[in-house]
Length: 174
Image (tube, rainbow, N blue to C red; front, side, top):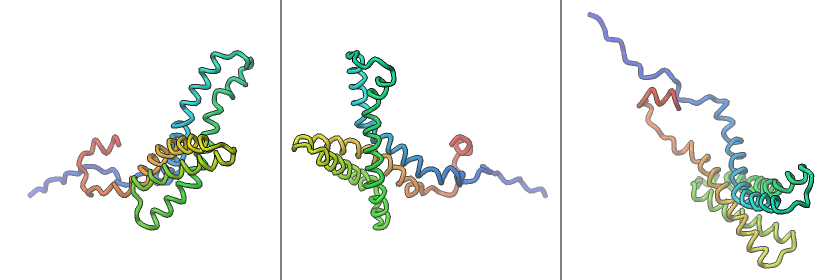
């Protein structure tokens, strides 16, 4: 009597590469910072580029490049500040109290971005309109940045998959 060979669906391990897994946090931190900077800095960079095309006072290329990307540099610094001072402590707090959800992360980013914008306006000595504008810009920047960060943080908790493999071709591709 001969036995039938068993059908092996896939020999690929379910666990991802440990190096890729340990780099996810810094990679998504950088991505969140870039998204936050581009949310506000992108439109301002486009406006400075249009202004640069209309004006010819800046003759050398170096001055033009610095003028064109200065909003992105500025918003990148504020976005890094927001991620370090708001989102990392908020992540520690939310995970310690077992209430880490995408909604809580985005709410923290929205409020934290607005607070950082208002504090920056206070440092600059702006009036109430300046506080409102900088607070709104901070909230606009904090919302997508915290959304990207929150989605990254929710990945491990949303990956409750069954141990059986459904499609070996999918496993090879993804």
